[in-house]
Length: 364
Image (cartoon, rainbow, N blue to C red):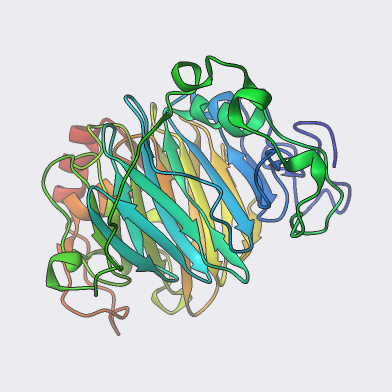
């Protein structure tokens, strides 16, 4: 593993200094692309999984951390709650049983769970391989992983736990670990089996409270051929962050996101799941980013996105009202689950008004 912020060697014309491909996230305030299997890699004692930090307090001004978790079945996490920390769970492979506030659901790819501060919860990856891309806010909570990480040389994760991974939290982190890491164990008895998904799991609330959201349900908006299906917005996160599934197609040609857009105060993390797209920042030559890669765009970066595949999908994580808010407020609702066959026209007057409201700049 390279030094934090190290750049991959290769064809520099495909990965210019302004938007380099890196093995570990930059800490100089710059933008970057990182592979989902890279990042700031951690594997904590008491765990058999691996955490790949794509962005944390060093990149997001402590607003949120976004990371990949890969691992086998594990029941190492007990029931617990946080006083300040908001957890969000999103699955890309396998399954994860999530308990929150007296309810449980079995999460499969695309399913989501939001756990605000104060609520007892427990995530249990089911294996044999589970992959998730959670968000935690504030960002520095991930020091709970960082400060007890154990070196490992596995390609994916330490599937078979050795003696060096055994021990109690107090032995690993010290007696004051609960207060220091905002993690308080709870005792939960008579836990029922996970409930079946229901209609209530197809909507998101208008306030900050726990909820589950089934894959490809919830509200959906479209702005000129780019759709947004939010998992959580600033309404459900106490104005701290948003996560949304963004989808588009090269069939539609240039979109609103192809214009030069600047969010002065909002960081963006894009985890690309399908297809590929060209990303240009600060008038530099575009860089092609593919499925399996993560793009970090720092606040106040001028960027544009060109969708170069028939179907492109990425999950967008933002430190406030980001591109998902622009699509929602300047666009229109869409009833279908798939991309429309024709891109709706953009109401330019409405777009300008929304941009002014959100405090963002959009140039041709």
